[in-house]
Image (cartoon, helix red, strand yellow):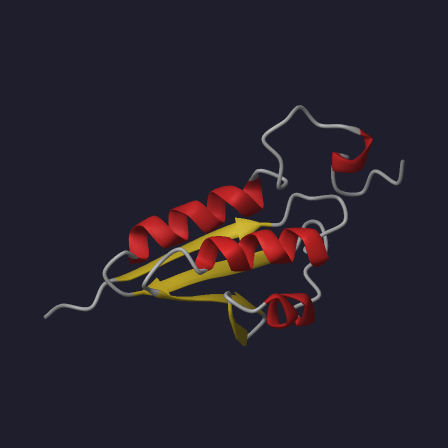
Amino acid sequence: MPVYHATRIVVVRHADGLHARPAEMVARQAMQYKSRVELVRDQRRIDARSILNILTLGAECGVQLIVEAEGDDADAAVEAIARLIESEFTTEAPSHEQRPCGDGG
């Protein structure tokens, strides 16, 4: 039986990075898939299903991460998580809280 792998490079777009709320959203999304999903930053690899592990990445706005998955639904898992990270964690119009990277206001 073949093992499926998927990988995508993403940039954290949320002005405050992957703090608690976005980390919880990523972990919750990763748990929806059967595949093992990991996030990689600078050679550090963590299980994307763990909020605490995600927080240890210290992924601030502008940081590049690799989303990797292995399993039957690897492609779908990587795409969903990459889309979430690149969406600034909102489906609504940007507010003062979703300011671009580097914008201190």
